[in-house]
Length: 169
Image 1: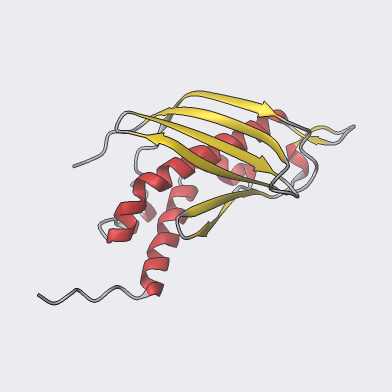
Image 2: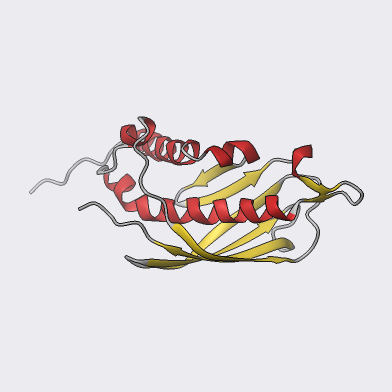
């Protein structure tokens, strides 16, 4: 039996990029905060470019705690959704056109989200990565770290617990 010829790398990258763009564009609050996602393979890094509207204390100045928490929660939800969709995207079974046409997959629902504010968020770009600790059919646990200039000096971290959406099939 002959092996199937692998898809060209460009086709796979386009499918990944289209799926991520559609997933992110489907959540208006992400656009409001200006959050972007950079993809390297299956790893996502969230970027929240600095904007004056994100300042909570103009005297320091420091990022608003609510903007920080929202940034970390969005990172957790997109990271968890991305990990759920990854196998479908890679196998080609995933139809990015469905996402682009507005047929969003159901997203995980937050049960609880605990943020640890480790230091003041400075008036500059912020970055975050989510690590899925557990993802089952009904429940998932995600840890998120946010940093600015130095990845080893997080300014906030969070742990989120989510109810997983039912999968079709």
